[in-house]
Amino acid sequence: MNSGMIPAWLCIPFAGLLLSIAVIPLLRPEWWEEHRFPAVIAWALLFTLPFAALYGPFRAAETVLECLVNDYLSFIVMLFGLFCVAGNITFTGDLAGSPRVNLIMLSIGTLLSSVIGTTGSSMLMIRPMLKMNSWRRRKRHIMVFFIFLISNIGGCLTPLGDPPLLMGFMRGVPFLWSLSLFPVFLFTVAVLLVIFWRLDTVNYLRDVAEGLRPDISRPGTEIRFEGLHNLVFLLMIIIAVILSGTLPGLPAFRTPDGGTAGLKILGEVTLGWPTVIECVIILAAAFLSMKTTPEQIRRVNHFTWGPIAEVAQLFVGIFITMQPALMILKELGPSLGLTKPWEMFWATGSLSSFLDNTPTYLVFLTTAGTLGMTEGIRTNVGIIPQILLRAISCGAVFMGGVTYIGNAPNFMVKAISEENGIRMPSFFGYILWSLACLIPVFLLDTLVFFL
Image 1 (cartoon, helix red, strand yellow):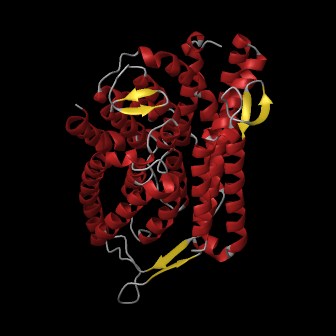
Image 2: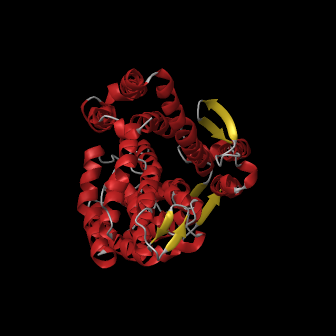
């Protein structure tokens, strides 16, 4: 099917779903909680049925299955595995959520994101952050900056950090090349941490002035972790993600025509064996984690299935309804005339804020590869100047934090925070935080690195 023939009005269900996520929880929170999944399915059908009428039931089924099998499946299995494993590690101690301690924890989590991924670091760090700040009244800003830094920007230094960079590695970008983003990473993180320090100090002093105090009964500092054997299962998940990026390039996993070998589902839709291996390893890690960890640890962590269920329900609709937007973007990408680093940074980032940042990254990576450059990084899609590749990479990773749906762990952090009594910003409220804190920093990035 020629993606250029996709009419723009097929993007309406995607826009409608985003508006539903943003508005209905504000107007009818109880209704949304009870009818969230039927509403998501309704929007998915409002795309699928007109698409089937235009292009036939087979093409519609193939499009939806392609999305679910090759995008959503590995996405939700990885999220589920990390949710289970991280939920079985608990932190106890008498560290209080002061500006200094929060700054240190955010810094550690941000660095961890490039080692175990933004999702892994988010799930590992969120419960200690929530516990340390449980005594505070003003703390939503802590979790907003948690999403900015740990769930997004921190993942830019290695292909393990964020899926877009893993896709770049699979297409010929050297594994260690992402370390060249360190100056941009350091500058961006430093500016955001300064903003956070000032904001957290003001709110901390207000809490203390109102008589709030952390419950620390003993002098000194005691920190104790339980369930640390789950780090083995976390390593299993990391290995599974690495394998998903490397196995498709091996001859044993290639078909004679150059595709990825796997299980044929329908038409051209194939569940690749690398994806099967990834999912099996992750699900085995989750199962072993749940079986080998005492239930008491999950009770201490206030572990419930609500957050992962909410994310699974919302994102199945998002993945399906955003297909027309991705098709249009793939068609228009090479003809957009984007040749300058700042253009690539903002184009990739703006679209990554609302679409899946992995296919958005691949669109602009391919676009940059078709510019006919003779110097730069030699990839499978062409030679790409390093400055353009930096702009595309930073745009995809950094701006995933602009909205709740920009990157996988954002909504998860929101859901877990709300379950622990923090009133997080609404969909539009969070975007206001991004406009006030993130966008000015990205403008500075543009001036310093991409002009």
